[in-house]
Image (cartoon, rainbow, N blue to C red; front, top):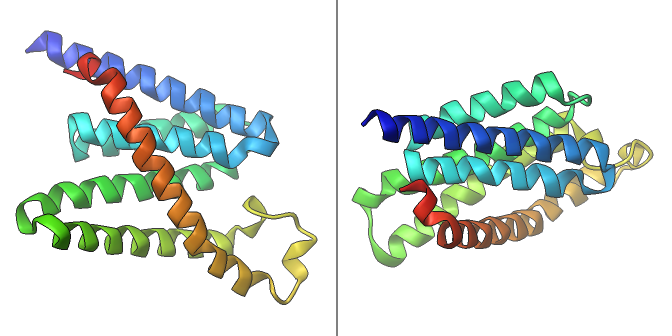
Length: 179
């Protein structure tokens, strides 16, 4: 029992370090900020899948604290939190739905929950922290807010597909490491 617990803590610690490295890379290589931050947020989903919602929540808190202390650009923490909270809520809701619904109904209900969570988090980012997503010159344009909110559906679709594929790849490749 203690060996399993120690292994879990060690794996989550290594994943937290990897998450922090990815978020710092997103700051250093500014062209790939969203890519590296999304990859770091994917690790929250892996923690929830293998160790449960509680461990995933603690993992998210640890990663956010590490990012706050290590990352030179504190604004990127909000992008990481939005992406990671999306993954955390989606994986947690999927686990909760496991007993309630089945088949196609479960899949469509989960897709609706994922879109709603993303819409709320993306809307908050666009309204309160638009400088994370676009340059300051575009912020003054009248068309900025409707275009960004409309593009959110496409962004969600791509992010969700990327997460599902990354999760499949990771789980097939490293499944034996987590058991």
